[in-house]
Length: 280
Image (cartoon, rainbow, N blue to C red; front, top):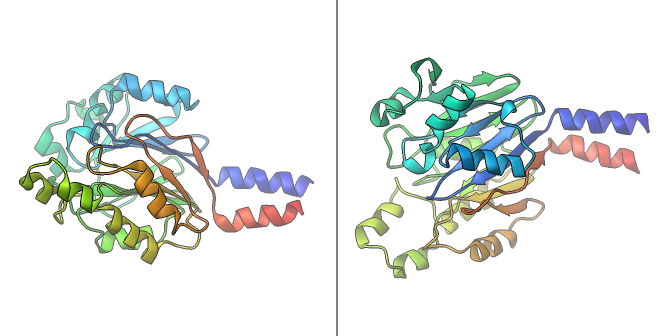
């Protein structure tokens, strides 16, 4: 029995805890952390709304040690300045993104990061890498500890080599499934906006996201968070059905544009199997 308890304790220590606080063109914010520290990837909802949603999840802002900014669009940075100011949080942002938008963050709290170079926040390592999107210097992120990796892959025109390489290593991922191709084509958007969305610097369609998932999902991926769904050009029921039919052992979660998800504990799969064997 003590061996089982010890394995569960070890499993918990090696886990990462993740939640989407909001996901969509009205604001994006993703929480990833361990028992001691956490980071926010983007902060596109207000400080007050971020606090309310974290409180409902029993997540403490005291554990949040930094904000990482993917790019300068408002739905990713709206709450950055307010959260950083109130909690004195460092903001990690590329010089290109900072120069283009001019985030109103205290200078001493701005920390530049470089592509492919990990940043250590306690026992978390956060690595940004370039992506295709219509922004100045957009990046996706991998958040990792010694055994678990979580990816944030949204606002993608295409699933480029960088995305494929990192997606293959993830135990869990936030993956954009922005639009249904038929809904976009027949919907009310003007042609120039439709073309922007489906360009190689726009957003991933459901089918593009599904192709990435089917072809490059690792066997140990336990959770896929379908993210940044369009309000006008997609349906949560549609995309959930599409992915669940192909998901196998991977749990499919819809990251809502209206409220937070639950907090999910992401494990390294071999440890889970060892614990399960010990219980019997």
